[in-house]
Amino acid sequence: MNDPEEARQVELAEATSAALARMGEAAQRLAAVETEGGTRDGRVTVRVTGGGAVVRVRLSDDAVRGYGHAKLGSVVARTLRATQERARAAYERDVAGFTPPEVAESARLLDEARRRGGSA
Image (tube, rainbow, N blue to C red; front, side):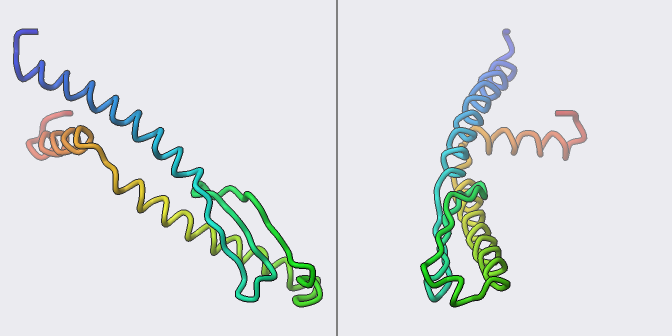
């Protein structure tokens, strides 16, 4: 490989590949971060991950009496959904904040090549 530009592209591709692997690992760690939520009265508390998995649902001793059998299920579902949405928003915000420079440079070069009409 005598062409300096080609050598630079190979080096950037390797660095980008390694950076994407690190990004994937970091994203997995962030997806495991837990978020807690609950009803205002504290009768229902839940814990979910950034990936949306339900970790825990706790009902107070008076949850059934306070909400009634029919309403309790919808209260739990609504509380879970709201907490999952908050956890997902935090996950997406955090993931967006750590794009490695190698990945950004590769994306810029690909966009530039597409604008010129070349293939990437």
